[in-house]
Length: 501
Ligand SMILES: *Cc1c(COP(=O)(O)O)cnc(C)c1O
Image (cartoon, rainbow, N blue to C red; front, side, top):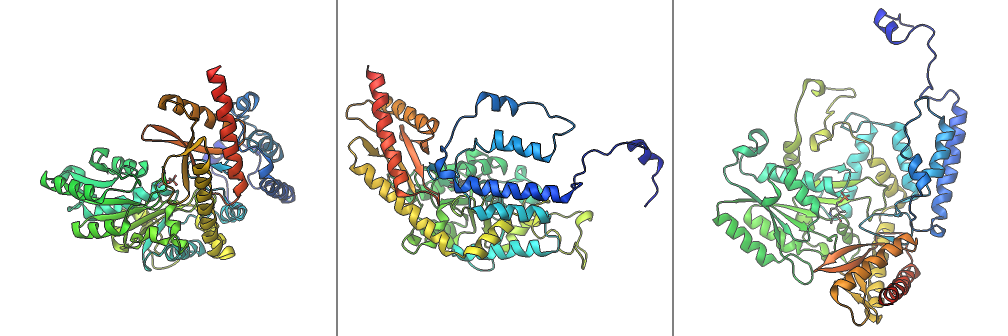
C-alpha cells in the first residue's frame, strides 16, 4: 500500500463509505445478469417479426425518460429492468422485417456479441500496439478486396458514410488544392475552389464542403437525367465555365447508389474526366458499393475501383451494428499527409505499446478510437462473403418484385426507375390533383408507421410525395412487401373516403 498524502486525505476523508464499485462486488451476480441479458436480447430478436414495426413512446414512459438522475443509483438489476420496460419496447424499428425507411441496416445478431467482445477489451485503436490495430488493418484489406478496390490502399473505419465522405474529401482538398492548404489555410487560396457532385449526391457532401471551409457555394450540384444519374456533359461544361471564371476545381464526387432512388452515376466516365482534369475522384458508395458483390450488378459500379477515395457503410447493407463505415484512399502517403500531426506525448518510440502509436490517428480526426473493427472481423470470419452477396441479390430481387407489382396495380404508381433496391411509389386514385395526392400519401405513410404495419420513408421527386422503400434488410420476405401494398391501398381508400364524405 502506498501512503496517503495530505491532499489525498482532503478528497477521501477517513472512514468515508465507498460508493458502488465499478467492478462488481460479486462477479457471479453480474455474470448472472449478463446471461439473462443475452437470453432476453436473442429472444427479442428471434421474435421481432411478431412485434409491431414501430409504436409511439407512451406518455408515462416519456416522462420517466425525462426524469432527473437518482444520484445514489438504483443498482444493476433495477437499471436493467427499466431498460426492459422503458427502452427496448420502443425502438426506431429497423430490426423489423418490414422496416425500409431511409437507409438503415437491420443488424446481425452476431454483431451484438462483437460489440460485447470489443467493449471487453476496450482498446484505444489509435494505433497503439496490440492485436486490435492488426484486426482493423486486416479488415480494411478484406473490405477493399470485397468491393474490388486496389490492394495496398490506405483506409480507416469511421462512424459511417458521412464521416467517410468528409475524410475522403479532406484528403482530396489537401492533395488537389494546388497549394499547401494544410499549413496556410484556405485564406491563402489564390483562387476560389470548386467541387462537383450531382444534385442527387448525399447531403454529407455539402456538409463536407462546409466543414472543410470551401463552403457549400463551391459545391456545384450538376443536374441529373430522368434516370437520376449525373449529366456528364453538364459537368464538363460547368468545369469549363468555372475554369474560365478563374476558379480552381479540385474534386468530383460520384454517387454509387443515391439515397433518393438508388441511382448510379457513370463512374467510368467520371474517373476518366477526373484524370483528364486533374481532380480528386471520390466515390460515395454508402450502400451501392455492395453491388460489386453480385456479378449481375457489378456493371453498376464499374469505374469505382479508379476512385482516389471510396466511402461506404458497413452498418447499412452489411448488417454490422451501427456505427461502422469505411473510407479507402488509394494513395497512402496522401492520406497520411492530410491528417498527421505531431506532439511530444505521441512521439514515436522504437518499441513497446507506443511504437507507431498514431497509425490510425494519422488517418482521421479521432485520437481515441473504438474497436469497431472487431464486429466486422467477426462477421467476415464467421460468414465469409457469400451471405452478403446473397443478401444484396435477394433485396434487389425484392425491390424488382415490388416495382413490378406496383406497375401492375391499378391504384398505385411507380415514381422512379429501380436500378437497385430503392422503390418510390404512391397511391393514386384515378382523379386527383397533385396537391391532394401529396397530402393523401403523406397521411398513408403516417398511418403505416403509427399502426405498426410497415416503415417505408418518403422523399420528394419533382414535387411528388413518394413513399420510399429502401430494402437493406436481411429479414424481409416477399409477403412483407405484399402486406405493405395491401395496406397502402386499404389506407388510401379509407383516407380518401373520409376526405370526400
Ligand atoms: C446513408 C448515406 C450516407 C451517409 O452515411 P451515414 O452512415 O448515415 O453517415 C452517405 N451517402 C449515401 C448515398 C447514403 O445513403
